[in-house]
Image (cartoon, rainbow, N blue to C red; front, side, top):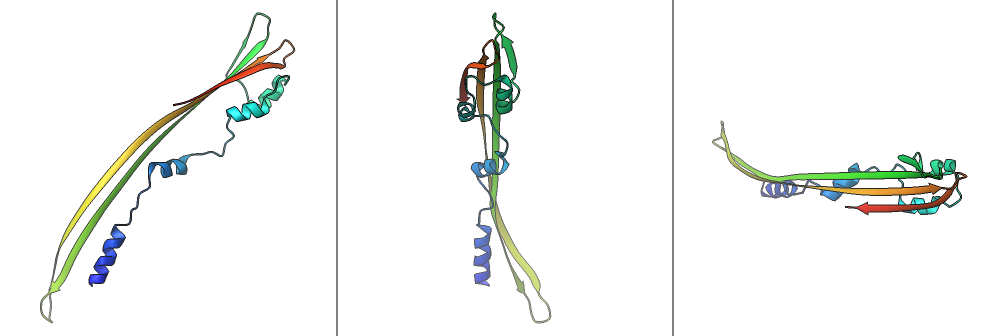
Length: 150
């Protein structure tokens, strides 16, 4: 009986919670193609056509033109990630016994428990702005990008 109580107590102490990093890994979806600085550096080249740029980056968020009718395309990407993690833990103990003679008995016992919970939240944001300038023939003449993370 004593060994059983020790075993049950040990099982009750096994943590059943995971931390915020594990929660984030479970809900994050990295399967989609993302536009990144490395992607821009690798794929965008001076002299590309607008159709080639769209094939690589998709449609721009904004298109403007200057006084010489040369277009500038702006890609503005923002990603916000919020992670909230909570955990609870506790331990309960119930001791009981049977008292009485051979013809019957009385079941009795006592119990005790305690619990604890904690939580944390984190929010982060990433931005990537890509500016692509075209010449009068509609070919990429210059491009730039800015990235931030906070």
